[in-house]
Length: 413
Image (cartoon, one colour):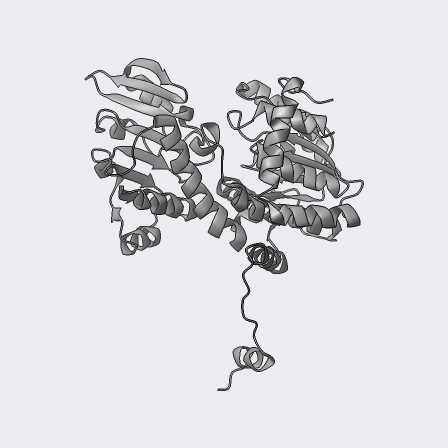
């Protein structure tokens, strides 16, 4: 039994799903193959993921494979109620509500896991956390799962290190066809698009501070520079900081950048990236946005404590007026700005990531005797997704000749 906001929204959600399906050729091809082979027949799959049109199409693709699919969100503000309604109308079990309270959000996660899944798809690690704690009894039949975010993978590696990981997981986030494209081009475009749409302000001529120069940070920095911004990078990793410098960006500490930035975008996956010491130095009118998974990168408690007045300025923007009159503007409550206040990554980008997810879940369904650890996406899956994408783009590439293969794998000239 599903629990959603309003079933009557299904037609609107269905239109959105059909739209993205037109631009997801990889999932279209995989769905056709899955319908014929039914590789997940009889298996229960639970998904915790940003519940919008593109992820809905992944859920429907897994259903074509014969799976019994149950879905919930991975962030209350990224859930789209019309998409949830459309999935329910298509026979998918959904427990999700836009803007759910913390208690309701956790309850939706637990209700979704009540199907006693054999496979899970996690986004940020909430499922894994529950299946190692309050819902451990629901993991009895679990064969394994996939994780697609940097934050979730960090949590999994911590469990693997201390030997507490209770089932095998695949790090989809580390696949080349995920982080090179989804993290970089998807996050870069969708983050800047959301900020521009919400604020209706220019990026050109502004100083944009990007906290973190991983793949997501690289994408945000690249797009901000392309839009005419002066881009400043802050980092804690010396190699990444040096790379940012070599890529032509200014690199400095957040304490120094705080007084110079007009727009701040956090993409670190860490906590307390921007805190009271930084808010005190910021200009009047700055924009504060987060593109990391959790709303802990910009310390909202510090912001609230410093504010003489807190007021809604427009949809998705909260103003914090400081005692000296400066106004600091927080976008999307400090949650993922590209999903909480935008439409998320482009369909063509997510097509690649979700192709990896679908094929990785099929791999888990058929693999035997996997250890309870974190696995990489099998190279043949990564390669097949790249080949499918090139084919969809009508791009042909060269192939090594037998003589070239021999040369590359030998040791003589």
